[in-house]
Amino acid sequence: MKMAIVALLFIYLFVSIFALIFLSVKTYSLQKQIDSLTEFLNESKQEKADETAAESADNDVLVMDKASVEANLADENDTLKVYLTFDDGPSENTNAILDILDDYNVKATFFVCGKTDEKSLEAMKRIVSDGHTIGMHSYSHKYSEIYSSYDAFKTDFSKIENLIYDTTGVEAKYYRFPGGSSNKVANTNMSQFIRYLNDSGIKYFDWNVVSGDATSKAYTSDELVENVMKDVVKYKTSVVLMHDANDKTETVKALPKLIEELQAKGALILPISDDTTLIQHVTLSDDNAN
Ligand code: ZN
Image 1 (cartoon, rainbow, N blue to C red):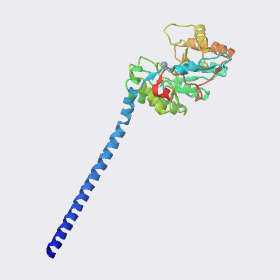
Image 2 (cartoon, rainbow, N blue to C red; image 1 turned 30 degrees about the vertical axis):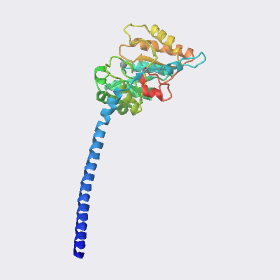
Image 3 (cartoon, rainbow, N blue to C red; image 1 turned 90 degrees about the vertical axis):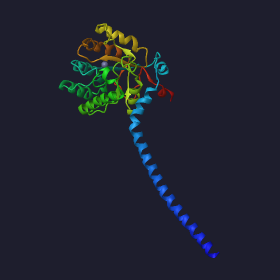
Image 4 (cartoon, rainbow, N blue to C red; image 1 turned 90 degrees about the horizontal axis):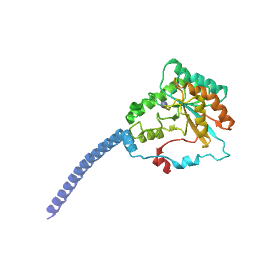
């Protein structure tokens, strides 16, 4: 009887130890599996990050922010703020434009493209050293390229950002979409590109006043001035669309008269800065919500 009890105890002990070893081995191998699964999940999460950003942006809704348009309507006693912006440069006219701005001691904003000839690089440097704001207007300005995909947009963006930095030392902070944020030419959802700029801390500026220098109608310089003057009176902040391009000689001709008329109205002519009220044709719906 005593022997039987001792034998039973031994068997019990043996089984317990065996079970303990078995469970330890099992736990160890399960832990290893969990670790490798976690690693795998983290890696694929990383890889998917960019894709997801682009895909989720497809679900973003673009809206016109009517409230900010209304808030920008000028009252009689408001001092008008006018931001002259020149797209598409540098060009053969850049120096002439800069000379005129210099004559009147007025600062403006140049949204430049990727031009790398010596003259263009010098023009970019002068824009900065004269105290104007230099912004980005894409590198290639080819809608079919830059708007073809999220990656294509990012690549083009980096090229113009780097060119401006390497040439002038300025980290450009402002972007103007070729065709504007509401353009229909892109034939793709602009929200993914807006999301990219927002995430990169870049502000995009559209315009609320057009000079008309890029329309099919060939306006005279006087008409360009009239086009601007009839609209700037409507807004507290006006961002005026003009072009710095080889064939836009009427724009250059219009500039002295435009500045004089704006100053006669008591308008402040300013370069775009962080204080500038955002003028955007469309924004992401969730940016409006908060
Ligand atoms: Zn353009």
